[in-house]
Structure formats: structure tokens, C-alpha cells
Length: 81
Image 1 (cartoon, rainbow, N blue to C red):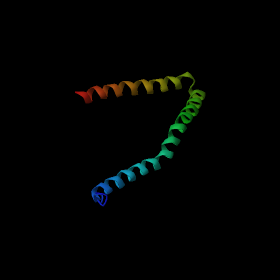
Image 2: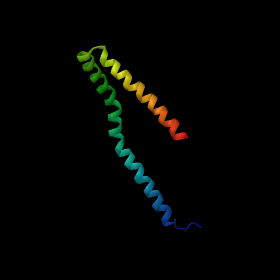
Image 3: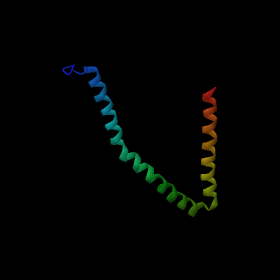
Image 4: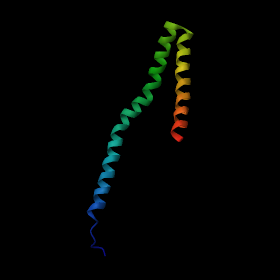
């Protein structure tokens, strides 16, 4: 019973899963950079937009987020049908 060799297909599956996990871990620094960098970029661009356009710049940002939320809900409802 102790002399049984593991099936080669099982070893291949394990290697494939480990390979995928390593690939995802390799993408982690890029994702974390984007997560922490995006709010800073948005804040800086909002400041410059406010400096140039005044409150109209924030109206544009607000509409951008409102339209995004409305369309995302719309597409979810269409996809469910």
C-alpha cells in the first residue's frame, strides 16, 4: 500500500493550479499599485478641474458617477431577462 505512485494526471493538475496561483501573485503588485494610486489621481484631477471650472467640474464628476450607477443597474436587469 505504501508503494503506490501518484497518478501523473493528478501531479499535472497540481502543477497547473500552482502555476495559476503564482501568476496571480505576480499580478498583485500591479493591482495594489492601481488600487492605492487611483484615488490620489482622482483627487488631483478633481482639484485641477475645480481650479479651472469651479463647481461645474464637480457637477461633471457627479454626473459621471450617477450615469455609471444607472447604466450598471440597467445592464444587470437586461442580462437577467
